[in-house]
Image 1 (spheres, one colour):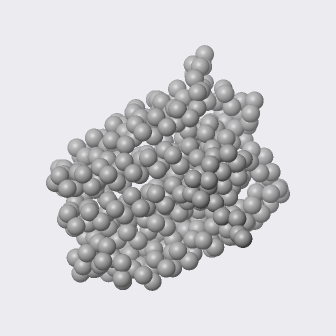
Image 2 (cartoon, rainbow, N blue to C red):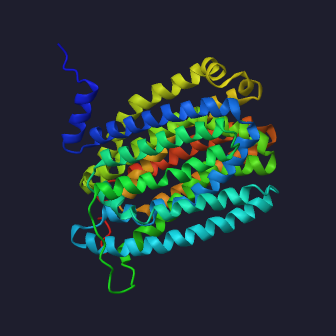
Image 3 (spheres, helix red, strand yellow):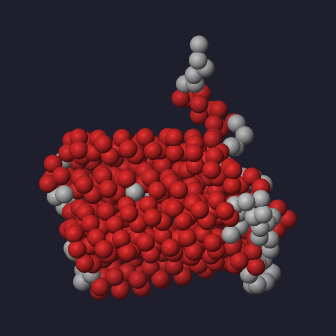
Length: 428
């Protein structure tokens, strides 16, 4: 008789077993499952209550926030996860102080960008929404180093708890605000209001207390590794959101709203799976020897592809049935269906791109990853601009072609680079 585990027994086993790539993948898959179910419920309500223009405004606001927020994702956490044991505590103390300064500066930066964006799109409602969302940066410094310590210890159950709580909270608030008639604010405010929960989870998970350094000299390990990482994340975020900026600027916010809906309804599930995979893969590769990183990277990609590829293809094939049933015929009439399918297919080459990116970062060569990110972004941009005369369907086709073309050189270069001769991890 097969050995099956009930849900409660499975959760207990996940909590007690030694961290591993498969276990961490399971945690993150569970997280993304909860996230997608919660987002599906919120999107079902929002799609029937909000107009396309509201989705378009929210797309611009959230895009600006994600571009600025990309700096916080990569400023110090990856460097701390990779740091040598004998320098780890010292780097944590320096990173904690610097992170406060960084997040305060990013608040001002987001407000300044928001003012410029509001003028560029000739829409006065954009600036206050972008400025209000910048307050979420105040929730990051109290727990960013705690999050880095959790990742270093491969405790992705904590990451799962933080992300699941945020996802459920955001979904509930989106529904409440949409029903209450908040318009586009229903898609923006929940991200700000759930940020304190992220801080609470990581503060509770780790009892670390910072010790202020006695000098302001920044350790070379933080600058050498974090500089390219910030470039990687900003370029990556820009590539993932540049289509919103182009469509909103060259077409209209109404058209952007249709595209934004199709993107989230189609690629949302796939991006969730990719995020779970990337989050689990990076600390797993960091914990392996240099000679094994290449083999483990390919093994992880094959393991993930066995599960993700059938899910992505099934989503594309079933889209003509579930989109009108779940979200309403209005979105089909507005042309969202072919956009959804094309964008969803672009998740297939993204598996290769994300794998290569995490492999190069874990190998301590984020500079090479930055070059690949720039190449991919150029191909994205060329594809989207070439397809722009054909509207949002042309943009979606350009994304699919650009992503596929970028995956080929990325895989070839990464496979050659992650040989046993990979340079040793940077030290302070």
